[in-house]
Amino acid sequence: MIKREAEFELRALSAQFKAVAVIGPRQSGKTTLVRMVFKDKPYANLENPDVRKFAMEDPRGFLSNYPQGAVIDEVQRVPELFSYLQQILDETSANGLFVLTGSNNFLLQQSISQSLAGRVGYLFLLPLSLHEINDKGLTINQLIFTGGYPVLYNETTEPAKWYPNYIRTYVERDVRLIKNITDLCAFERFLRLCAGRIGQLLNMSSLAVEVGVDVKSISSWIGILETSFIVFRLQPYHSNFNKRIVKMPKLYFYDTGLAVALLGVENAGQLNLHPLRGSLFENMVVVDFLKRRYNSGKSNNLFFWRDNVGNEIDLIIENGQKLLPVEIKSGQTITNEFFKGINFWNKMTQTEGGIVVYGGDMIQKRSNGITVVPLNDLNTINSDC
Image 1 (cartoon, rainbow, N blue to C red):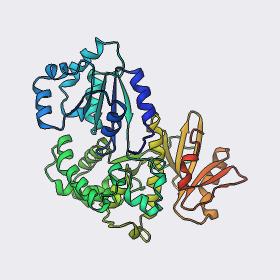
Image 2: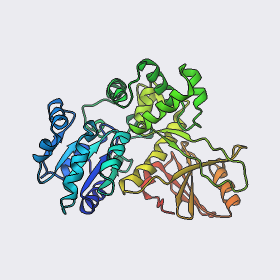
Image 3: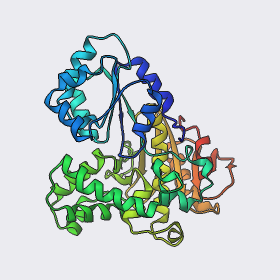
């Protein structure tokens, strides 16, 4: 088993809250992690039809089987449980009694906010971070192609075969659980078009024209992808610094392997000349900073900045009043172009410093306070400004 960085935070939450909810995409390792950390707790999987039927028809009787608490997997499948869980948690003084997992953020958050607010600690568990898979000796192309789902780091699972089945299962089952979409072919076409827009501004009108549906449907479908941890929107930084700024978010995937599969890439070698390689590299770096936040129990503090004449910072990390600009370049050779965005930002904000993450292998600390860091050393960056 690959040791997960979120384990420390999970143990800390279970010591502070009566229940803990571990939320993330399917196959991100939630069940493996919670069963390892809470190996003495009984386990119930609500994906099992018999178990789910019992929990739905007799929630009080179902929970009475676990007087010392339990790990309950895919708990959003039986929202009826939450009201009964509330009573149990209110009547106990024990922390870490129930550990709940779920792969649908909307349904789970909705149920928790209605019944268990203040009683549950949240942990978002995304697929493996670069640091968690750093000892595998993979090239950048292999990292992008394989992605971070733990199952892909055993010796028998091939990404090229695994991802199409993951996509098919997601579209045919999970999407219908969230919202009953009748035209699944149009939704899958929409999903593949999203993969082609990685790192770009999210233009819903353009997507609507290409998919052949209205903008309202596209907005709803983006919400479905977000709530099931397929994509996320990177918001623009809100301060304009006396300049007209772009206010549309950028679109990224939580996993580059999934995006690559949607783009029809069949092996890592095909990425060498792929027109979206730079965007996929950028996506991998952005989501890795997000994983670092979530693994330590912190909220998303990531933005980008772009003005109306094209000046841009790929990533702004906000901590209080401090802002850390990060430029992301897939190239292996350091050039002056790498520093253009950060130099403009520092001049505009009258600050100094910043990070350039690139595809080479040499760390450089420049006299202007900018540090150049290879992808493989990303975990050495102190992103707390």
